[in-house]
Amino acid sequence: MNAIDATNVSKHYGSTTALDRVDLTVEEGETFGFLGPNGAGKSTFINILLDFAKPSDGQVEIFGTDCQRDGVDARERVGVLPEGYSVIERLTGRQHIEYAIRSKDAHDTNPLDILDRVGIRDAAGRKASGYSKGMAQRLVLGMALVGEPDLLLLDEPSTGLDPNGAAEMRRILREENERGATIFFSSHILEQVEAVCDRVGILQNGELVAVDTIEGLRESM
Ligand code: ADP
Ligand code: ADP
Image: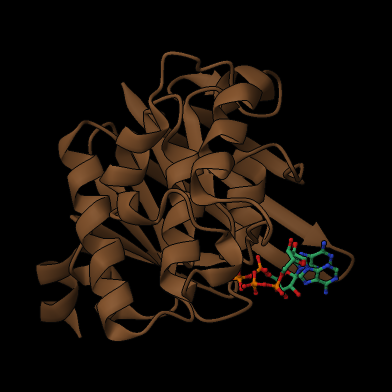
């Protein structure tokens, strides 16, 4: 079964074409990089997967479930790291994870195990106001991991991180992929996707202009 199946997906905002007849398949277990400059349509595509935006045309499925017709069911299998996420400064790392456990009814989850997976277990009892940018980003990723999603959608997860923070994020994503999660990772920086992703799609002005392995793309450049 495919993790993502997009068929002929277009999205228009007035006279702006944010997505132009995108066909894309991401197989279960893949790490897929969705690469494109700002304004290319990456967030629009992710919003359609999450049923936060309706396509003007076409269809998107997650694990065979139609995202628009059965959006809630599709979202159950997805963990999201949204762009421009935020943490709640007065809550500790552990309290953030506990909040995610309650809201997803995932009561058999141990918050410390999740914090361990994202490398901030030692900071479990500290308020998020004292976290670095990289720690805060990993905390939000930890919230996304609650419930063991089969698909992780990450919108520009490395933006604003220093090189160490970005490397740590990549390490965690590779580990989550080894645990079985399919990874869909959007970025405007090739170097950030190539260290994690098996395949890359390049989006330009809403059009998917290439889909290939990193090696294949390098050869054609
Ligand atoms: P990216 O995530 O690659 O930066 P976006 O999906 O955010 O690109 O945007 C694609 C295009 O669609 C841009 O021209 C953007 O201004 C436009 N757009 C996105 N969302 C909206 C919206 N809600 N209303 C109007 N235009 C939008
Ligand atoms: P990015 O380019 O990284 O996607 P944006 O700032 O373009 O970030 O988009 C952030 C949010 O604002 C998205 O949810 C997008 O749909 C919305 N958005 C983007 N462009 C427009 C626009 N021209 N009008 C209204 N909403 C927009």
